[in-house]
Length: 144
Image (tube, rainbow, N blue to C red; front, side, top):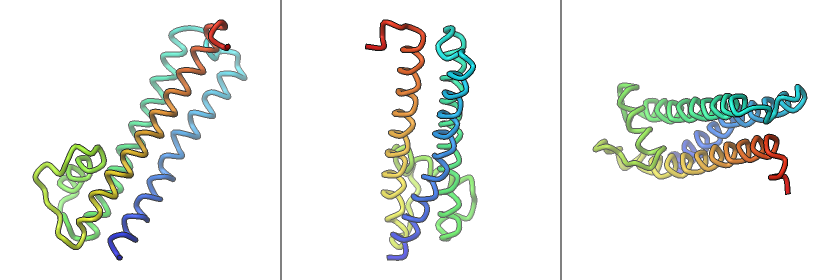
């Protein structure tokens, strides 16, 4: 039960990390609307979308690092770089890359994969909503 508890704590921690790009997205959209620049030009829309995508990417990197720290603390890996590589494989559901965890902590792999899948879904929804909003602001005929 300890690995499950550790995994859930790591999972919940990544939710808090992911709130940062979500909050930034809302703040940027509200600011753009308040300033009247939302959808004003292709380049403003591009810059806004690129910034939000960058925020999401940074959040994912932090979340992968968080899981890597968990692996190091649990004694599965002695070097952060190796733990990060393994974590990135789990988080993206790519696979372990040949690194095997002990039977004690093996459950953390699928938990991290589920976490990564859900966080990528949140990022995709966030980006899709932003792009839709920017397109509707730019092209009035899309508001229907």
